[in-house]
Image (cartoon, protein in one colour):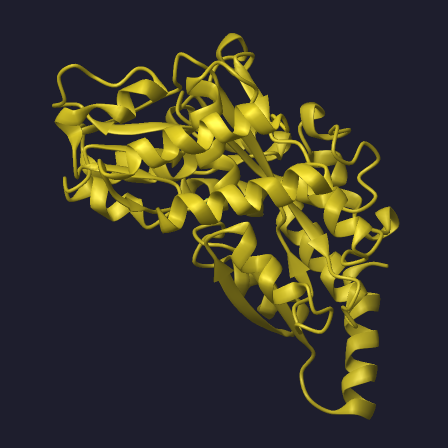
Length: 340
Ligand code: N2P
């Protein structure tokens, strides 16, 4: 359906139901440009209620009930299958998503959803260490985040797979390990590190890095890129020697949504190369949209924090869904870490 026909049907619906249709979109912080949402509202003559979250557990806590009121959410790759199995996401109609072709070839058939039946890749990135250039020596490995000299100036992500993942990598294991012994050793590492930590922080670490309060932080590349851009040369980002996590955040429509068609139009709008390129320029994120990437100015398109070369990315590991048994062990270990 094209935009004109859609507008006519919206007008028709508004005529009998009254009121402007509203779409509820729940996304990670800093994942759209200032004019992204107003632009959609103007063009489609709808209202968007836009909310943000800082972690997957925060998002899941809201949508698990199946009547959260949200229509579009942005799950990370390893949560697409569990959310599908829990019946939380709706199958996508590709005939309503003509801009799917703009996706980078690397994201057309991702391992977590090869036919893009449930999700559309949106942003991607790595997890590494953002740090003050003034530090000597400069962090190069996860083990450097256990350095006494940085006591009180280190942060880790407030995210169980990320913290356990860094500890597992420090020990030489896979970040997706489900082995109880490896996981218990990882927990001990996390507990040993705790007395050096300032806090567990996600995107909030950005401002503390810029202010100079944090010396070294486990950080998402997108958060690091934003901090680096704001700090004029004082900050840097490294992908640790032991290996690191890669992530991809995806767009999905909740099964509970009663505005599936409008939700598809929203996703397709975010897939437009011009819209996606503006988002990347405003937010310093790494887009999964190949056509948008080509529109970027060279200094952003070639930013090594956001787009590391393939030989570096090859040292990364994608998060994978956990079995029920290892998930419940991981949940328990995280509680022990947080309460230690
Ligand atoms: C949001 C960054 C989220 C990346 N500001 C982690 N999936």
